[in-house]
Image (cartoon, rainbow, N blue to C red):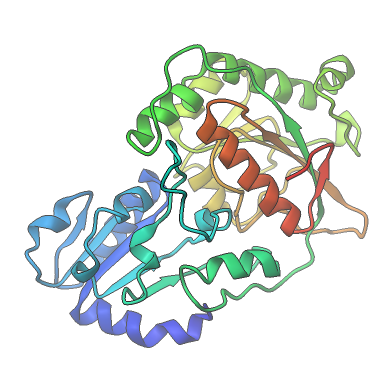
Length: 337
């Protein structure tokens, strides 16, 4: 949707009504809740399931996209998604009722009578196919614009299967992420091998993963993108000597041989790297600073997508990411979305 069309209903709801703000992860929930409480809105600012205790009075509930579907349609006057990027790869069609592992549907914001406003950073590409999928939630266009960015080459690396039981993400999303992504030792070791090989220019390692780079080792700035500090700690124990950037860390300085959280990268403004290894195992990358500025006409940066092939929910997300990247016009090397 276009930003100016949202100002009146959002302002009205913030001053008088019941507002639900849905965010992708806990770091952003804490950050938004803290800022809203400090703003002195004159009504409760609650997180998690505390909104159920507000008994219909005015409130601002800061919650996750997962918890969003626990709201009843009549509970909120307006729903705001400050970052609508997790919806970019979501299929606009309702899930198959016979599917034993259906993907997230975000059914709450599909209700036509729930006013929902979603925002994307102006630098996020918005191809026609993606825009049409977003109409299922917002029915208006999210505006994109901006600068000339580097060309993106997407390379897929398939990690080994998890060796432990992985919960169903629809039932236990945090348990799923811990088992399949954050604490998956085999997956983390592969990510470390890839990242070290990219940084050092180890041709034997890179050839083993089918990675060819458009720049030499001396020119290559490499970063690993993770969802949270817990995954950061697990990877930092393997990637000896790599820097770590969390929320609150300095956003200045050269980015090279560094592990960054998604929340830090979102605030950094510019993720100026030559190679980004996406270890999140979740939705498409929608950071305001990636791709970085082109600077020169032929600049190409590489996105290494850790393309999980198990369990089944991870396969679905991998396909959604690749489809979204293809819609953006990014070059998929040896892959089909």
